[in-house]
Length: 214
Image (cartoon, rainbow, N blue to C red; front, side, top):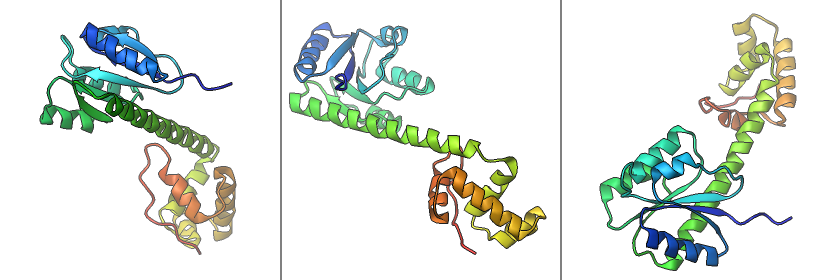
């Protein structure tokens, strides 16, 4: 089965603009959902799995586009956002980009510029989705470790040698090496360097300093 077309969520209070841009996007092969404002979008949030992005007017009546972006970030929304505005504003565009916006387009928007920005947003979403899956996989592997193995894991990725870890934990170096071997198996890595890279992908963990071999 082929993947369904990407969904483009257009949030803009200008009915004629929504219709026009929606027509362009449909002609390019996308599905389109339209919203007249931030409240309407929040009352009917996107639920479809698969590729999608948001075209968001900056100067909406009521909650602004920036307000909606912040609400989406608080909710943990992963959809990439392209901001649209009738007049450029450097301060607002900087704020939007810092919150993770993909682009900031000024109306009227040339068709090719619009479609290029949409393609970039969808590509970014795909990369983020892959990275998210990878982090979940690594976290699931880490969850297999026992409490002692996690202690040894932390010491290994901090660059400590087996004899140093053994001394710190008050157990034999041979036992540390056995723990380390089990950690490598459970984390599905074949080298200490790879273990260090995997450690950096774990949520809420600092990147490892260095990994040393004995």
